[in-house]
Length: 258
Ligand code: COA
Image (cartoon, rainbow, N blue to C red; front, top):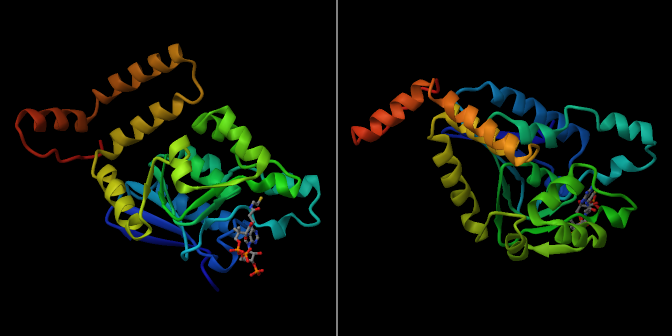
């Protein structure tokens, strides 16, 4: 049977590829379950520092939830399908950074998945949108909450209420992605960034992600106190000692992850 999410490791980077190219990599239950299995394994795998999520083939990153699964579903069936753990929340709170490598159509649940990742790098051929309104639905994978935080309320309203698709260049302009690169350079550029992050102290990267994510839910005063506490916590790690000593001795740091 076809594996609907493939895992491939490149050094300390794990690449997870949604593998339903004939269905534009639409997210069905099997994809969500397999993605969670991989993430559970990677979460405790010390050989991996960063996760990259992408889609198989040249056309789509992920063209949304599998619309076929919506047909005939009751509210309660849908509620059950959306019970925790949800991949969107798992990505956002994952202990290692997650990068979306967006190779094509990035729509609906695919766009929401990319927004749940920590960073987004897109091919110039990618296209973005939240087309749920055309199905008589609203985004249900965090789009109404994450999109305005990323691009501002006006752009989020425009995209979610119209269902319009926008090209990668515009997505970059409004802040929906951080970087747009030629299609043939997408993998190399993504791996370059992912490998650089994965070469840092995994412990410190984890704490930095936690502090950054906290800024999404805390008021500024609480956030600053939380950052101060996490900064001070770093002073108890071997990696802080190593990093400072290596700088002063003008040598490369060798991280222990402790
Ligand atoms: N769910 C289920 N199947 C999907 C899908 C989705 N979200 N997106 C695409 N597919 C399927 C198509 O039904 C088609 O299957 P088939 O070959 O068995 O008929 C196949 O993927 C190829 O898609 P197709 O529409 O023929 O390709 P296209 O290049 O003409 O258009 C899209 C590509 C992405 C613009 C178009 O497929 C589309 O609009 N998809 C739905 C996007 C959406 O509404 N997402 C939000 C869902 S909540």
